[in-house]
Length: 336
Image (tube, rainbow, N blue to C red; front, side, top):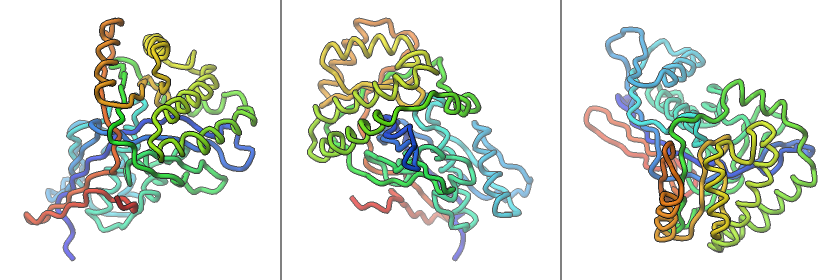
């Protein structure tokens, strides 16, 4: 079978809503809760380098080059590829940009050179998904996701729950265009310097996820879901405040969140290390009213406010060979 000549991939952003177990006394640690989101995405195109210039060309992003080279080297592929990054999820904003770019490049290289790599294979090679499996789950299937945490084996955190996010619910995103969240070596050092997480709080978070958050999303109970997400965020954010200076890393977003909570919006929080903040709403109308209210009451000079939906499908993959196009709209093992 002839190899595809061009691979195009579009991968969605995700929100990291918090951890279940930062204590790890049972042998597994972290356990992430997350949500795939619509409208914000990374898009790439990859093809074999027929010019034999022995160079991976990337129009916008050096990271894509580095990821491609790592995959080719790991599998001793004596060939090169041309990669264009057409669109990027904002980097270091708490939206999972690095993992989505890495998986997009890895899947493209795998398909171009018939490597037959799984997403877990790619994650291990490119050092993605070590603490959280939410990014891999978002790429694979979309939706609301929970992973089972990192055990003592080399295996990456497995997705243990995946459920559709209600189509009428909306998320108001607050994205700071100038500030970057903790990443790289600073993130690694941060996790190593955090004070121990109390066992009783891990028990409380696990109970909150299993007895409130999960039943609420299945029953489409917005108040139960959003209130519990807000509680999860406060507990986890308080623990991380020793590194980021508060429950939120950005003081302007903290002020906005305090305001909207007083006005009845309880599902608020920060995605990962931020600075992106999110507010859950039960409808498009509510989201637009809230967005207008925020703009009227706060000077949002460096903040971009977006209203988005959850996304219940994973990445979009298109293979084109000699004008024959095959589309794998959702590589998920889960069926709608």
